[in-house]
Image (tube, rainbow, N blue to C red):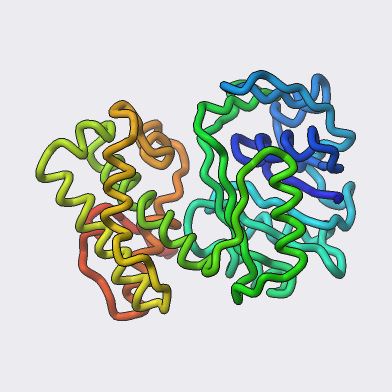
Length: 302
């Protein structure tokens, strides 16, 4: 299969390298010094399972140099999705499928509005990895995981074929009965963990141990469940309990990626995590303010 990875950072670079090593034709859309390093020396994947060096035949910052592909893995940050959707139009052929791996729940809709609903499936990944230096992706640990599915949850051949391809690359992949519920279930954890971590500037071991911040975590999770329910998404009955159990199992020094971005003054996914809960909640008449306390919207243009 001919696959374009749009955004070859910690997520895109990891999955692209795995797919390329498994025998797929993978073309990387990247930029800056990372792109130049991939062109010059290949893409190196480092992690607890060992080190792998792959040499893609194509690494570029221009989609029109690649042309139509069978699939596009969208691995840019959430705030870049709309711009990326426009830039990837040359990659889209009659049967191309596009899979977003962003944190949040809005990327499939954003892509569908630009590229057409028929090209987009929903997806999520669980992975801790980052660009260690240009041309090198560091996988921190833990088994990588992917879930994907059609927007209407039909088990189509293209979804099942993509699952097989990802599994052949050594990554656990699932086609859940309800991909929207799966996305919101992850969303429940990351918005709460990231939001509380960002506002406290504290690692998870501190946040979960203090009664006040632990309650804030739980309140934020309950709000996401309420918004999801109003949005027509049915989450497991024990969704908040399961998420809190996961947080209790995190390394006590762990921090969320959004928390780190905000602390370091970098652009963050706040608008597409906590902000999305507030916006969707208000549109559904649901707003309990727990998430709102962790979110300051961008000022409106004047």
